[in-house]
Length: 287
Image (tube, rainbow, N blue to C red; front, side, top):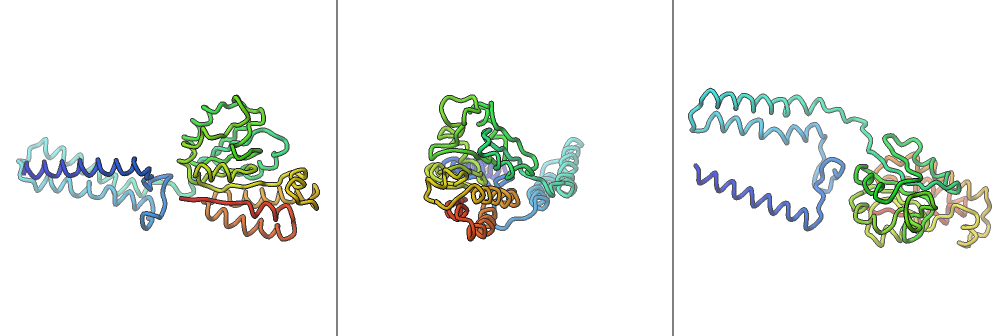
């Protein structure tokens, strides 16, 4: 009996070490909680997932204790009873009292204060459970916040090197989001990057989410990009149309968000040259 126990202990220890090493070496995210996805198999509800996870502990351990060859004392029966009571609750009561229906992800919005991009606040104004930061924070402050939140949205003016701070944040240099954020952003799967040439930043650093290439939001940008027939009315129609459409699906996962925007903003692109230019430069990337 002792020999079998030792063999099982060593086997499970080796299995755990191999599993841990693979997860770390290959940077695999276990599909649990906020990282849930259907790439590892069929998804089930969290209630039934909890039930099946706890069921072996509820059945096997008491069975071993009761049927095992060791003599049963008052202490033995007390420990078996406490274990059984505890896992009875965890297996058959607690899972079906979990109230997660309608629970929303937490969202961090980084949108530097700038009147020329104020129209973008339409996108996130109705998002629940959010924190919007538009000035004052340092890069270290923002990095700590990114860890705490499920999703990150970054928007404003930028370049292939990142999102401009436009003088609103406690940083040295021009950027509030730059290459120093790559490692921490790579842990997020449904991020939103909306600034000019965000695609170059996202793709160069193998990040994930919904993002824009060159995005015309001003008449001067339209002229620079060769959309010579653009006027303020056309630009405003594109800006506010895009934001209204994105706001309607902003809480969806990246794939559905992208397909909805391409459909709806694509319809506007049929009659608006600025939207036509922009829609061709909207992109997404998932795992």
